[in-house]
Length: 82
Image 1 (cartoon, one colour):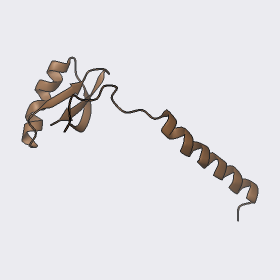
Image 2 (cartoon, one colour; image 1 turned 180 degrees about the vertical axis):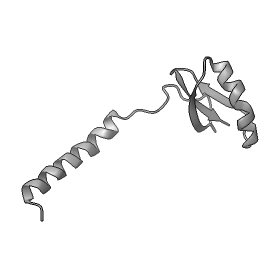
Image 3 (cartoon, one colour; image 1 turned 30 degrees about the vertical axis):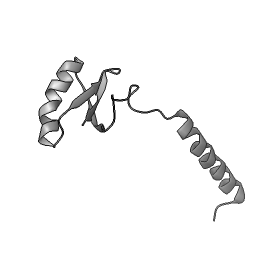
Image 4 (cartoon, helix red, strand yellow; image 1 turned 90 degrees about the vertical axis):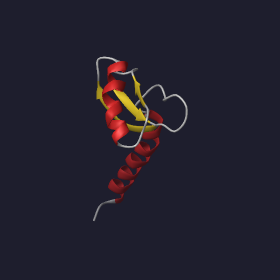
């Protein structure tokens, strides 16, 4: 059986983490995709936004989507389909 001192310490640590995580968490991409209806499908490293979108389009179309948007604000680009 754990002592009350241990239980209180663990409770305080869990409580602090519960508050700190939402305050420090950020989204995977800095810029949201344009417009509504975009679904995040992953992220990949590409040399350019154009190459990302051209490479990902056949995969998107095979899954029933008709558009691809790659967020080029990071080296590993977030990929969205619509």
